Length: 329
Ligand SMILES: Nc1nc2c(ncn2[C@@H]2O[C@H](COP(=O)(O)OP(=O)(O)OP(=O)(O)O)[C@@H](O)[C@H]2O)c(=O)[nH]1
Ligand SMILES: [Mg+2]
Image (tube, rainbow, N blue to C red; front, side, top):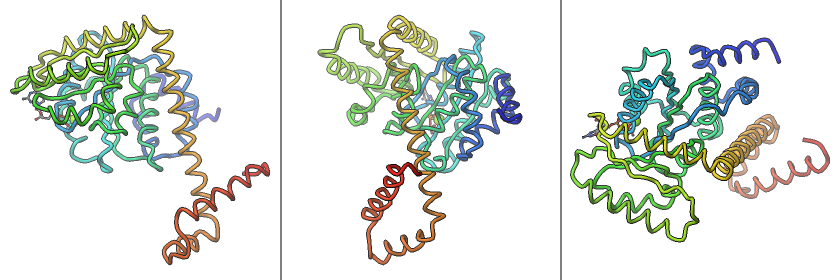
């Protein structure tokens, strides 16, 4: 291993904040140099307990995460916290708000808070999120909290990295609950209804319960049934209940380790591999294309409608595959 890679790896393993911050920036920027370091860090990952917190904008995720940090600190745990915003290509408003809400932990050496907002080089936000989680894990953090805004496919992909996935809702979300049920019901391990000081808590809990029992019908025994926890994050209410549900879920995962944990780890490994391959293939092909003399011509051909992106893609793929079967690149 080159000296500088070894040096960076040693520093990360020792929990060096500056080195970690730089590596995370490099990952966010899609720098190739970060790969070598990630390779070396990989064997040192898998120790942290990863908790994902997802939900629509403004439901109080950051306020809740801030209270969770406080609670876990009280238990003597060290934390890595990652705020991911797939909806914004800029590290703008939401992320800024996140950092502000968690500010009181900013000076605690046992709490390391980062945010990711860029999509990486070729749309690899999910991949870069996982990589950053690996860095926090290798730093020796006990708990990693990942906040993502939204409940779409991107967020679902991101939260599959977590051991325990928390979906935050608020009272009076009836229609929205209907809208999210497809993707989210399956990935949620715990539902939080935050802002429980607001009207409509009972109704929302009832609707959610009805949906959960419908989807649970015919399920195999020994399946986890997501609990619903009401919180009021700004007043720190319900947070200890949430932590205890997380413990229960963790115990469940461990008790069924053979099936659930293995399954979870395999799913995660598969996604990680696919994402990494995708990104590498696209990066390599684009580099080859951009260096080729005919690239400008190809673009012109599409503009002038002499061809179309689909035909062109087919040709490029066919050329590439020919290279493969001839043993070249
Ligand atoms: N009434 C009430 N307001 C809350 C509660 N928790 C958070 N809020 C408020 O809701 C607003 C949004 O809180 P955030 O924690 O930034 O929400 P978020 O989900 O992280 O928001 P994004 O990251 O922008 O998606 C803030 O003004 C909070 O003070 C709560 O339990 N009750
Ligand atoms: Mg937030």
